[in-house]
Image 1 (cartoon, rainbow, N blue to C red):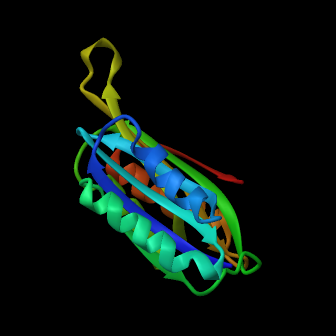
Image 2 (cartoon, rainbow, N blue to C red):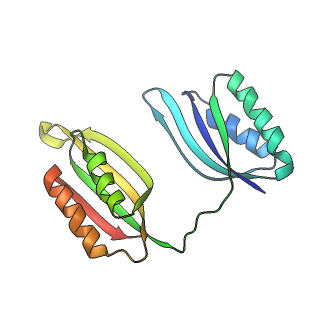
Length: 172
């Protein structure tokens, strides 16, 4: 079986996911994991699939037909399976008044400690009582097994104090 990661982008419309799923299914593929969303009238997504080695070329050809319909879809071959034994998973939620630099400052503090962001979802919403705009980031982190949770907590607390945001760090 071949592992692939698809990137999908186009004008949002009914049936868009169905057309991608149909191409995968018609070629014996399995839809393993995905993140998809409508953002500002556009549809964007990332999909991990597996497909029989003998069907890869046919699947790529099916994606070409979707491109002709205006969907930007790219299939990326994946050669290796991630090593999940060398890290532990953590969850981090950051919330506060929206302003530039929150993701940069938090991601920089994580990168300095060898921690990768496996998943990231952000959103903004109106604060209650006309208090501006609230920002929330939800992250799944992959931290080295040897990393200190207390040290990471202290580092994020320092960044959170500088940014004037709240955070919650937990083991997944």
